[in-house]
Image (cartoon, rainbow, N blue to C red; front, side):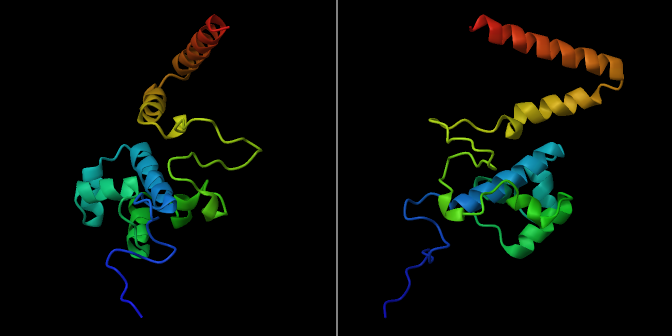
Length: 159
């Protein structure tokens, strides 16, 4: 029996491509999504769970796997259930391809090229946060209508 090489794991570890496990990438992206939604820096999150911001970065990229106790700590600090980190992940984890978006069904086909989920982009999150800081509901509604009309005009120009 040969000794196991250091750093290599069984089927649940890092794929032979050297890329992070897609499940670790998904969980990390959910950590980043929630942290950003809360307006929390990587440094603040790290302080709250006893890590450096570099370690938080590695978790968010999926480069480092998040253990169960750490995931529990993250769920408490980010005020979400542990299951949040696995939301929107297909039940067949073997079908997850690194770098491909994870869809929740509804018969979508895989896109030809990778397009990140616009709801997970920092720009989107900052826009939503800024929108809800507008205290006057009428001003907020007018901005909403303006944004829709600009988007419709831009789409009509491309036709």
